[in-house]
Length: 213
Image (cartoon, rainbow, N blue to C red; front, top):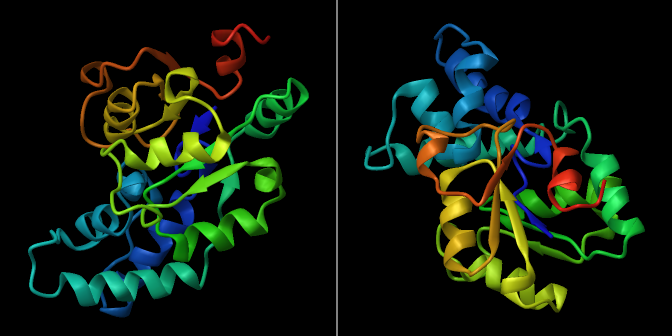
């Protein structure tokens, strides 16, 4: 079993949004509600700066603003981040059945490693692949293929769960079964167009989908 991180296993939107919102407040702009940031939390700095400032990666100041966002986020990596309801129970059930599991995220290791090391939830993960672990990031399949290698499982035997279109695109390209986590951030592309093999409205629904309930 492989999972995306943000929006699938953990809700990091409060910390990601706060990191971007601090940039607004520091510039004398009014604060925005978390609800504005949440849908784009899965897009990381790109998504947060788009919400906070309407800024795209081709903006002349994007690199500097992104690094400021990164520093803010590092300072509050786990202030408001938590596992979604049902995720600890889901992972416990996978462990109980001896099913290896891991994480494939586009979040850079700079942030992924401190987060997973601080949360006991990830102690049993046998693979953690960050956005810069391989030369590619999702929607390229290579991060998922690397995770399968770390698990010692053939890609065709893996299921990948994610809350963004790029997760499903990457999973399908890697030859894996894919599950859309509709309780996550979802991004801007309608979920109906993702072509996932299945969808779940809560983490524990995965057990039923896999015939493990």
